Length: 346
Length: 203
Image (tube, rainbow over all chains, first blue to last red; front, side, top):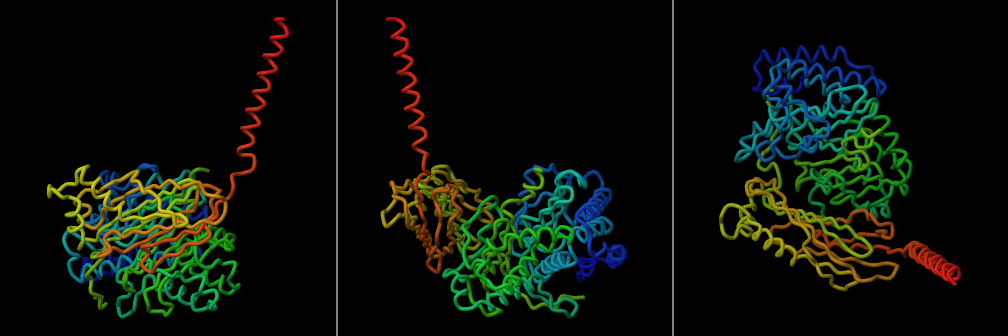
């Protein structure tokens, strides 16, 4: 994994070299820009099978769960030590095994989605290197976990689950259909420097939302802005199956340009999946745009901590700063298709 | 390759607050409040101490019931300014270790029966005053499951300790009461006719 490889002072040079080589090889075999959903599924299954093949029996036992097992909901924003995950731990893998996992993620996610995942994990390394988390809390790249629920297949439903502190990717595949709901990309720190570059894992989400609130007129803002503080995610981990009453400004009351901006925000989450899945998902969200709402809580000047929510018939996105701009929780849901409920039933 | 980010990884998560998240389900004849209470690590010991009153290190059923009753008393519900009786219908407490780590959430379900309401606009007010010294609050209405209820607005105070849900209560669907009545009358007529016919044959 090119990111985890570059993590400072953590990995031996041999590991770095091995992983870098694997990553480069993977990039050279990068998928075509526009791949169909069926092709995407086939590539992901192949990469998943490669992960399983790289493990011994004990590793595969940690990796593999039944599709309907309780592992499905074994995800959280919390770090190890506060929340225990039961699947395959990255810190227990050999360099080739880890490289196979990263190839799988790179295959299953879009380039931007993969970047976000890497930057979130890298941010956790920043936390780890900044000092102990306190008590028995463990941060860092070793504390991310992979699980397969069901057997990777191009025809029958299965789920790829990857996550750790501030990250949960739950990607259900059923033939050529996919759902990435619920997923939780979050960040702390939300801004850090890596190799001389400023990294903001969720920076575009933040900036695009501030651009939209800035583009609203006074009347629209008065509808969009809630008069209360939203301290955290309303539909975070453990809130599966809940549908709250939508609030704010309806997209049907936006101009076409504002609607395009709204869809641009949504794409930051829906586009984490590889393009073959993201495009049909965006088409579905676009079709429901008239019934989609945008709500805001907090200041409207970028650089401030502000909460926002986008909610439609098949979509919930929440972006919730934790009192500070440097600690962000977000959630992405599809109330009709969390854990692939809709596509797995077909 | 070294990280140069100037960050101070002090708190990974909410530490010194007591998150109290409520979701309200409104039906024509009742209200259900799902209330999740999650103390942060820094305040967990204090919250645990107020539950584990015998200091046994575990939360007994009686202690859980007693604490749930305290929370219930701090929750106020009224509809159109008429106070409602709030009852505890379910509770689940995590173990002390989970709560102490900041992960454990106490989950309470509170319910109130609504008085008979005429069709039209109504206002349901929810207020939670539990542990205002450390509490942060979320309050949201769920999308009603009953088609007779349409939520038209939600108003909160800044801290979300209070939520007023405005909703329209629609009349029962036309025919929903008429059809069973008509069916009953029909059956009665048939029975009477059968009896009359039988009586005529016997005579």
